[in-house]
Image (cartoon, rainbow, N blue to C red; front, side, top):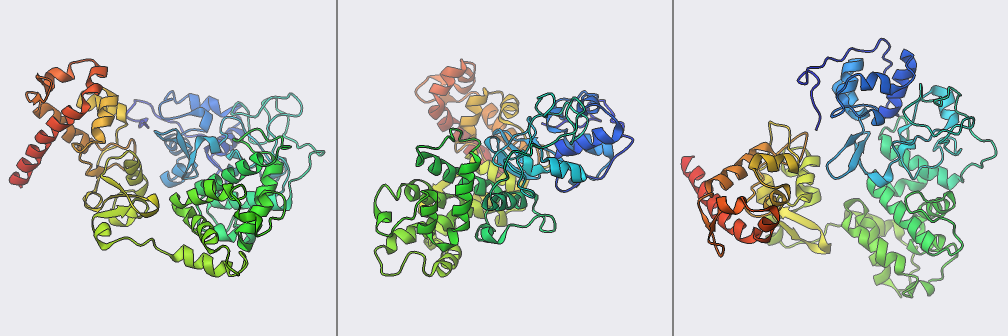
Length: 500
């Protein structure tokens, strides 16, 4: 949880030289530029002077509070720079939520040509799948050619090693293929989200509507397929695929518009005949990966096209014919649900239009199962339309589960179970901080306190006696506790309605 430096009793003294932030860089790159401009030997010096590690992580370049205090920049610009960790161990990079496995934050990789040209540390170099510069195609350098030290925050600028030697590339290392460079350019364009700086190459325009996390997930799935079907491959790492594997995947994605069979043939590194594609062995990629993509909103069209390809065989039309028409049809196709279903339920990826709350935090609450849930067609997750429609923005910073449990007076594990039960009524969504709104947590606390004297069925104990037992014993009796508290919640809701 971030802490206001003024509330903590500290004041931040602005730096003397504060160059404007560049839209291509994140907090790490900008902190290194601040260090270079002000003559510090490391950003850790002026960041650690804040003495507020709870809101300023020097390893990630500092928080928005640090940048607004050190440079007096606008809050929105500082929020874009900040590399922020969430409760589920994912991170925000340039405002986009990424899984930890997709990022390399503590060890820096640098394009020596870009750094020598303008001194900007490009944020796309933080992505673990980007091994070469998207602009120049040269390998990213991760250690000093002179002292051998890896590049971290303990250096005086984005283009310098901690020993003071400028970063240089190795001339003998080959550039990546054109297809791989185009793939890295597409990834970079999706991260920066500014067409004036980076555009998705025309060969990958079919994936224009796919967001970056989903696109990286698709690439990782395809890399795993290539690795599993190439016995001679030396790519043993799933986290960072080899450049040879990425070259195959890049070529397959560029051929996606030519048909599923062409893409599959490229992935297997041999041309696949139409008859060969119907065997179970050949279709393992489609069954295990492409069809699973139907559950990812941005990749739904991939699963639809694959399923259509399977269903149309053995038609007389070749698989690649009419691909653009099928793509447009499947992208615009809405899964058909009964009117009765849509009357009571709404899909999780469509809730943003039903509430004035921050869609990111609403989706976090959905993932925590704070609303009634139901599976729709294609196993898509739907939540209660009525509960979503009643949501209101909270006026307070949200609580993490551990903090909310302290407020209610329960062990954290028991609180999480109760928050996913029918007694927890989620009516507010925080716009910052943890996922649990203070208003809802206080309502749960009132329910628990009001039921202290109630006897739990089958235990001959009151709720107050039960909550004084060991945490493990509590978890064994969660269901009867929920049943008892539900009666108190109902009585409290009726009382509140009567007061109104």
